[in-house]
Image (cartoon, rainbow, N blue to C red; front, side, top):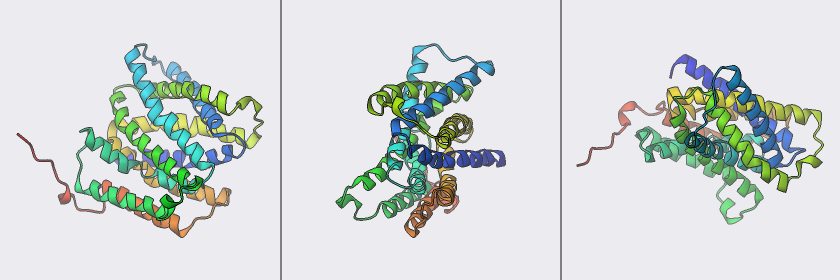
Amino acid sequence: MTARQWALLGLLAMLWGGAFFFSKVALGELPPFTVVLIRFGVAAIAMLAVVRLSGHRMPRDRATWAGFVVLGLLNNFVPFSLIAWGQVHIASGLASILNATTPLFTALVAHALGQERLTAHRVVGVLLGLGGVAVLIGPGALQQMGVHTWSELAIVGAAVSYALAGTYGRRFRAMPAVVPVAGMLTTAALMALPIALVLDRPWTARPSLPVWGALLALALLTTALGFWLYFRLLSSVGATNVMLVTLLIPVTALLLGSLLLDEPVTTTALAGMALIGAGLLAIDGRLLPRRLAFRPRPTG
C-alpha cells in the first residue's frame, strides 16, 4: 500500500478505535438497540445529505437496494448489535482486541469466494490470530458459558460479519463511496427501528449531555466518516488489506478505555493482542518471506 493509503488507514483506526469508547459511554445510560438506532439514524441522515450536496443521486432500482440491505445487515446491523450487547458486559479494550480478528476471517472468506488468493502468510496469520482469541477467552470458558464468555463470542461473531461484508462490499466499488454508505446506513436504521421500539422503549430514556455527545460522535465521526473512508480504501487496496485497520484499533481503544474509563490493561489482554497482531502482520506478508506464498495448481 502507498503512504497515503496507510495514512487513511491510520485515520480510520483512530475513528473506529474511538467507537468502542463512545459506545461504552452511551451504554452506561441507554440500552443497546437504542444506541444502535440513534447511531444508524443520525449517520444515515448525514450521509444522505452529503450525497445530495455532492451532486450524486441514490439509485432507484430494486437490485441495488437489495444489495444495500445485505450490506447494511452484514456491515452494520448484525455486528453493531453484537458489539453493543457484548460491551455491556466486557471492557471496551477487550472488545476491540477480539474485533481485531476481522482480517483473519476476511482472508478465509475472500479465498472461499475466489476473490483473493490464499497464501502461506495468511494461513499462518489465521492460526496465530485464532490462538490470540483462545488466550483472550481462556481455556475454561467453554466449560462455564457465562454472560462474559457469550459477550466475548458475540464480538467474534461481529468480526465474522464484518469479514462477510468486506468481501460483499467490493461489488459497490464502482459507485462514489458516499452512495453505498448512505444506502447501507439507511437500511440498517430501518432494521433497528422496530426492535428498539419493542425491546428498549427509547422514549423513556433521559440521556445526559455527555451521552448525547458520545452518540453524535458515534454517528457522525466513527460511522458516517469512518465508513466513507472504509469504502474508499476498499476499492483501492482490497478487502484483506483494508481490514488491517483492526490491527491499529485496539491501541486507540485500550488507551481511551484505560485513561478515561479506568479499565485495566491485563497481561492476558496484551498477550492476546500480540498474537492477533502477529497474525495480522503475517497476513500482510511482513513476518514471512514472500517466497512462502503458494498458488493453487491449475486443474484439468
